[in-house]
Image 1 (cartoon, rainbow, N blue to C red):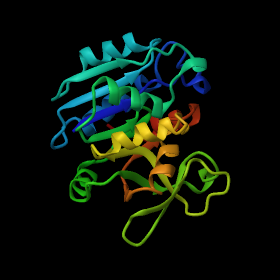
Image 2: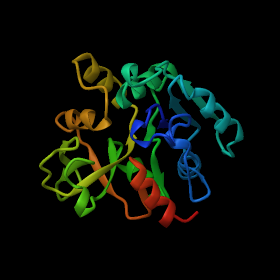
Image 3: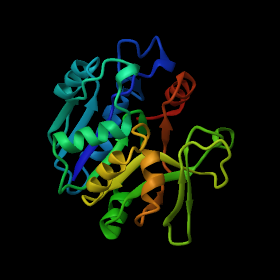
Image 4: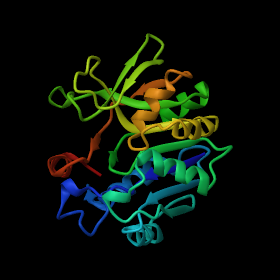
Length: 245
């Protein structure tokens, strides 16, 4: 299994902190966000490589992080070639770029947004994925004050199968949110290429999952541990005040 960490955004809402530093390298609880992700993912059973996809502007920064990281498996940094907001590939575009470059054909993958501060054990999710062998996304109940547009909305049936996925809807109904962490079987890569070839939105992964649930079984796995979506200065401040190593 490969771990793919999507780190190519420009985080303009968090200037000046992210003017010269990629958001995943902002420090929280004594370490960069990306290091916390590495600690939670690299040691999972079957993981043999971690891939961090960055943009051209910050690729050197990510390389320096890679060189100093303490990882049980190799880390590879990919430069997607983008230089600013005007030519960025989008999260799905970056995932497809990684799938072609590595390549990921024949490999399962754990995919996470690089600004996810994950401080909980991913082993239960990994075990559920190993049993299901189907696309799986991490979910939690969205905060009551953040259900309007910040998260992907997930609707599930009694077995945990996703029956509908909407990317950051203005009128959410379920209150169950995707947190930007996904286990993907090797069978998903041809579907991703098909989605993009059909003109699918290459930005957030939620657009792909909205398409995917109409074509194959996708499951949701709830998480209950400490987690922050570092999307703005307020969420960063909250994480720095409350998160513990």
